[in-house]
Length: 203
Length: 276
Image (cartoon, rainbow over all chains, first blue to last red; front, top):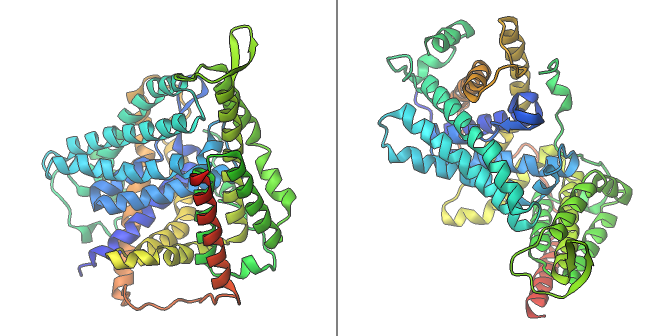
């Protein structure tokens, strides 16, 4: 049975939004990096959503992520910069645009070379997130330009590479490109853990 | 990574149940208020504008019977950061700043523009924070999707479907605890197999490889769950058009008037700011 695409898109957007939010609230979203700073992969679900289900899904996932970080900043800020995420221009608008940018890059490939396209979309989407968030923070006067620049060099570039690897891996796992033949959508349902592991081992 | 007990630490906002007229208003109105307040905080560019915004916030908080102390307490952990940001505005020289110098301390000078900028930043950020925590204090989670749908309703005319966004948000609320639980399970499972999430590895590629066995299954399984859920809903006859709600929110008496008054107040304030 074919699921109407609009219903599936809404549900997928919600599910990926939930992954973003869950990553934000668990240590899994923060990868330890140099000198106590951590890299984040919380924006990657919105890039993945944009790639597999189109720009709207990516934007909705980004919106869910953005608003959650806004309300979280207001009620339980975790770090020095966090408090400034109460500004929707910092927390919401950039995250919504990430999906759009990632989809734009991925659609340039017109469905060919999907792993590469997904990787590039991950890089550009992640960079767009960093540039827009840091840029609005600077514009808003929260941090000086020099600080934003050093954060960009120290964190954002590495984050982009990480996002590329993760995006490409997930998109390949989901569309079955990495493991040779493609699976039909129906055969993916009800797939149990053992099958899933096998598929990951192949990669 | 410390012992995973993720489900405990999840809370978005803090709802304060009170029997006030604002709490009883429809979710759409609460969203509208939040949007208006945020717009005011962002667009007001003078001290008097921000003061008026603050008084408006104060009025709403008193009307909602939320203890002012609660709102003030939310501000406390953020204040040092706002102060540091304000200070950095003073310490660094900003290009194109030709205003009067008020104070010189060694290499650091305090100009009129810097001082203004620092205070505006401090006040604006605090008010945005108050607006957000005020909104979560009067709006329980169960009303958020519904309110979002109502506040986006005018976009129906341009072919936009707010119901889809509301459905996505509802799904997200349902899925967050499941996904968090799943992250916990997968972290434990992969740790048993010797996965290293702690960060002893050096280099970005090693780290990405360490994170793959966690990230890929979490996303793929939530995509699978989403596909199954969509199929289940479809086979039970879910349709987008003409759905009723399990719970309907009726406007309290005078709500339309209240909404119009708030909108007019905000427009008037912003217009006044633009003129002066």
